[in-house]
Picture 1 (cartoon, rainbow, N blue to C red):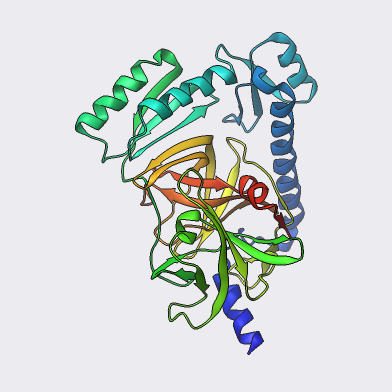
Picture 2: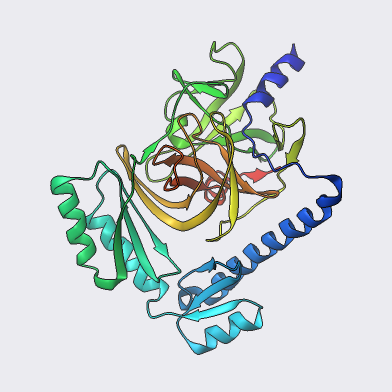
Length: 347
């Protein structure tokens, strides 16, 4: 019986599938993955060292790491570390002030904003539901920031995603499991907060006969993460949907321009590029702050799914504009924030 329950639990674990390659290609792929992780860690280390003298980092079209800086000394620090430096006029503090002003003046459902390091602006996005007086309010708020912000209209509707299918079930809805974590010696798993808001008990099947956990924490809106205390120990890796599993051994923050994957119970594996960090999204249920934005295609039921790069946990899927066209946008809760909030660790 325990084996049957464990098998059902593993089916609910969200995964990211990496392309299968001939055996001869494996070393090159591993080297490329290692370089990507090293570059991301360098970007985060430089931004931490420079503080407000950097307004963000990103990968340019050629794949080079670019770190924005506000003075020549900071530029020299970046170059000495092996990255490209780009001097910009708006500091991190200036752009934070702009986003704080938007929080006060433009928090209407169907909008999102983030710092775009490549343009040194705050990019404000509005979905197809933002019309009439709400659109006028948003346009006025963006104009008030001058060149520090720009407005972009996106198709679809920005919303959290819940649907029906084969994953974790609660409150009559379906979501996806993110990562197995431990708090001390007690095993848990993470998912989206708008999923853990729905119920206290979680199951591996729609019939609700295979119990896999009890809610231990939830945060939505504001954040979008939730913690479930597992009744059967979840594995510390993810199913690759090809008969293999990938170990997740660490967690880190995302870097603009890197490629990440999302594994959700509706879409399976989807890949995309990180286009923003510290993104504010205004869902109908309320605002969520500090999200990651990507170009990943997702659908209802993918909420709570695992977003990761190589062997590093990156995020928990929150929502998207829906659909899978070239203009889709997806939003993810940084996993590091959830780990810190619960005192948990990836295992």
